[in-house]
Amino acid sequence: MGSYHQCVGRTLIIVGLVMVAFGIVVTFGDKLPIKLGRLPGDIRIEGKNGSFYFPVATCLLLSVLLSALMWLFGKR
Image (cartoon, rainbow, N blue to C red):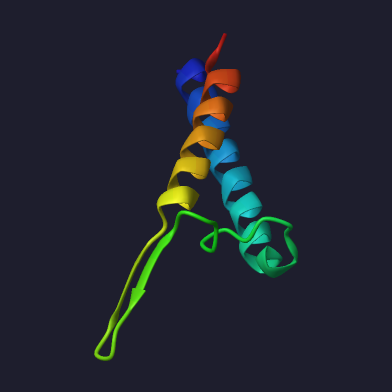
């Protein structure tokens, strides 16, 4: 049973650290050199009655970063 509890404990610690990191990015996002959500390649269409926004470049950048992190920390 000790192995199960260690695994769950580590997972909770990692999830907590990710949430703290995300909170810091959201809090200080305006001061970052890269403005997530406003990168070249993000699609924004504004009309008279509404708007459409799809952050293509932001999604690609986050996907590459998260894939690299998973690759680095996934190796055992």
